[in-house]
Length: 235
Image: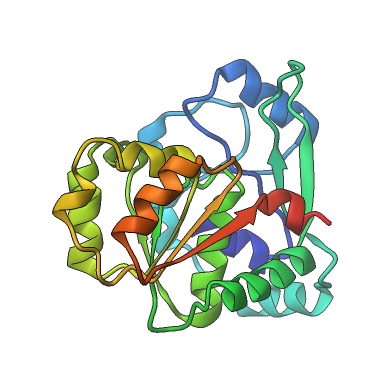
């Protein structure tokens, strides 16, 4: 992915939601003053920035000397990414996260969730939300398999549960509102989900009713509250 290349080059990144109002995106750009935009030609963004397109990556020449020099200068307190808040005051505010914070957080997450190379994770969080960093970097750290499903698919519980069974997903870490939505109706009762060993949640309060429905259906599954990834990684 693009942000691995950015990190390897010694720079930091911010992820933008292309569905955000243009005014918000422009405010983020005004704050960061980025040197480069990496995007897809399919999005047809016009932000008046020097731009690299993902479709052109394969044609790029790789300068190993530049990469080596960048790595030699790198220290763990350098920024990895800046996450912008929802901007409830009208001005999005950036939270700066360093490599060391993400490394420490990733190591702890792998320990808490008992993630190893045999695990399969199913990502629910769009990449422009901080919670996605947990799935991405923990998978890379231990060599686990990360499955990425478009967020709109989560509107169809039967498809999600079928995918979990088909791909033998072992670990999910989702927000409680998604877990609540999926256990409504009787979709959950149609699937055994035997592979699912760990369910974690972040960012919201877990309703007791939702937790009890999942726990009653999955007797051997471990349930964990991970709280807020940005708050933890930023401390």
